[in-house]
Length: 320
Image (spheres, rainbow, N blue to C red):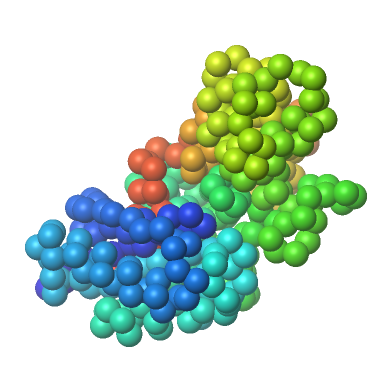
């Protein structure tokens, strides 16, 4: 193969991670930049170009890149455009594939970031051999990639699978970045966990908690995890609430595609049994009887960000 490498880029709400991948699916080198550093998409692409060009030169593969694949929030596989990227700092729509291809002089294709993670998991991770599963990414937001009969579901317009924006609370729900209220993302993302913690602290001001030692506006999901691991009851209750909410959602998702498994990916998914136990209990409690005991909940088998980078890189081979 004259150009035996591709680049995979995962544009998250906080960080953009990119890697050089060979035809065997090995990430030869990787790096990252901050997604929110620039308010202008052209400035962001300029920094991405500098960082990625440096990585390519250091890896000794200049001139050998076949294509670039990108996973990004609300990126349309059919058009190459990011539309309504609610967790991104730039005005949309953004013709991302065109901008990146013109900047690098290399063909580029894009897809939703969670779809990219699903492709990576299906090819290299715990979903290998599974024909029906749903990837749930728990990061700044909640993303999903739906695989049915071995095929990623894009829908007629390229935007199928926005399960993070299924409404969980019809009345008095939290305001979501998408403009609606009560979306799953506002409860079960990393930012949602921090939000729940603040609400619990306000509702239970006299209860002892390590989280009282942190200014409320500064609390992160990592703070809640650390406190819960030290036995903090309020912090553990936050994870119980989050797992219960997510379990309810997965039970509903099961009803329309009957997946063999849900694969959880992202920083929040690494909370272990703090999240997984209440999630599994809630899932079983809320499933229709014909699916009880049949649905697996799995943690991504790939290193942090590798699923999305590898999945995005797979698009690089198809970029034209």
